[in-house]
Length: 105
Image (tube, rainbow, N blue to C red; front, top):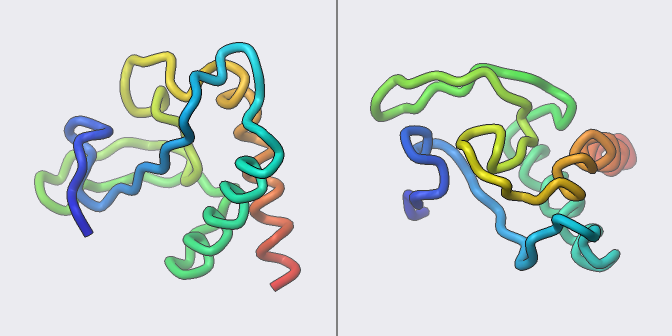
C-alpha cells in the first residue's frame, strides 16, 4: 500500500476512495454507487469495521486523532466541498446499504 496525501495529517492508516465527478448536482451513476457499496462492504468485512460506526481514528505514525464516521467523506476530514453535496448527503444511506450487504454475507 502507498500512503497518499488525501487527508493531510491523517493519511497513514487511512484509505481514500475516489469517484470521478463533483457530485454537487447529481448522484453517482447506479453502477458506480453499486461498485462503491460492494467495495466498502468488502473492506468493512476484511478489517472488522462496522459501516454505521463512529470511531476515533488514530494516525499510527504521528498519533493525531479525529472522531469520525468509519465511512466518511473527504469534507469530514478537511475543509473541502468533496465529495459534493449530493454524495455527502447520501452517506447515511450508503452506510445502510453497506450494512445490508454485510448482513447478507
